[in-house]
Image (tube, rainbow, N blue to C red):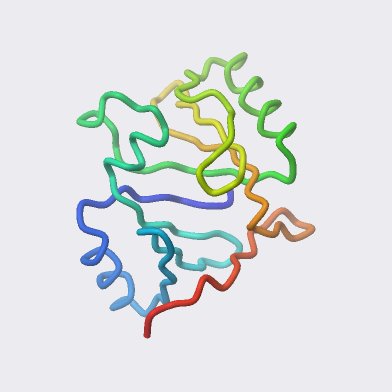
Length: 139
């Protein structure tokens, strides 16, 4: 797992909350990233997150997406296929993303949403942990 994305009602309020806990956020394109060890916590509009995952039942959507970033597009395809064979519901077939990457979404048998992504802007360390770029941040 590389990222946990929380769909929030008010991005500014959510960012302020986490920064008051001592976390340092970086905002880009109405999305706030917080480094959390080898993972990232991401804040994004709940409606945009549901739309990005092609989840139609927004009212029944818990507002959390777990993400697994991988090194190649082929890995995205393979993992989404494996998940479907294991009983997942593919909500969005793998394809090109707005950020220049490649991703797909599925929900596990209990309805938890997962994004499998290849993002050329994110570096993966040898152990698979995510290395966030410096997006620039507000002080």
